[in-house]
Image 1: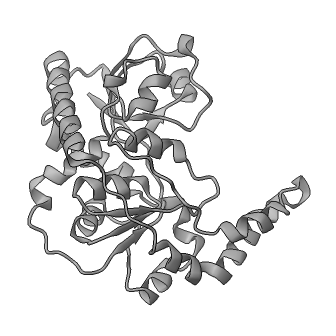
Image 2: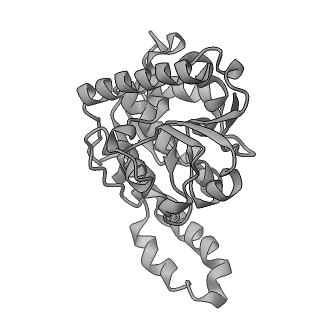
Length: 288
């Protein structure tokens, strides 16, 4: 079996964990049906994927819908096996029974041996989305407030250990929030990039019984930036935003730390993890 996932040039731990998570979840998967491609962790289902890979045999084990136009039911490839998708929202968009929308596979890492009995830290961690890494000097900002900056571009195992060891996670990275929740570490969601994809978060966290409000870190910048949204000024809009953000970043970060943290329902998480493990057993029986 082959594996397909998004690969960032500079690295992104949420996507990069695909390179090793399946060896833990379904050992020997690479020797399964060689005509099938596995889609696992990530937002990989959309109209473009259907157009490009519609002729292939695809097995989805927890990926989600997004980054494309609305799904047209008639365009869904017949050779794709949607054994499991990331959440109920993805299931609905694909016309599947909502029971197929279980959970993001990344929640299972909390049960892996290498992440047990880690030494706990007293410092909260902050993990932005990988596209926000270069936006500001996050390490400098975090240091002012006793927060440890963890880049999503670091090795995925090390990022997960930082999350698991922390007392609190401030996350623009969705997988930072997912993994924090799986380790029962409270987390605060924030939005930095104006192109933030909130639909992915809804897909994940409604399955865990959470209605997650994701506040914009720089609301005071939004109105000013919109003044430069005219076509002739659009090329300068990002630069203007970043400069304006730099003047209020300390206040914004301090206010973010006051947001009430989230933590999903542990019983619901356990039920969905157990159901997902049954999906993996069925996949092995079918494709091994």
